Length: 112
Image (tube, rainbow, N blue to C red; front, side):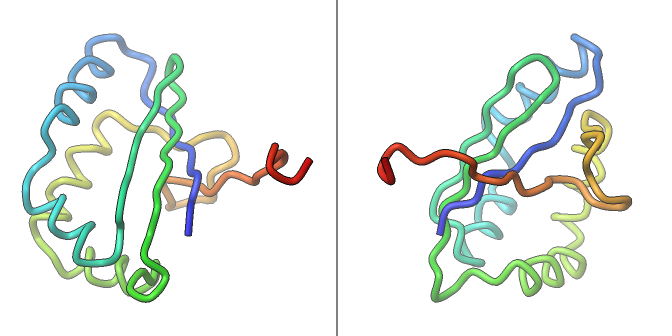
């Protein structure tokens, strides 16, 4: 399955540069956690302070709720998420207490 999610960054060029630096090579434990839970690929794009994540998952393995529960019980993932929140900000449309928010697909050339 393919997911498209949005998140904002704090509007601070130094923080944005540090965020991008952190993503040049994420912590190995984070990459392993994603792969273990069925994330096959993940890309993040940035325009100004808006981030868009494209994520492909293995339908037989990926379960968002199970991955979230495993994340809560993993101290290293929690450390990463706390660090990332130093840079991140919810979009105006993000529900309270959440981070990455699913985007709605409104166009697909293949369906034309």
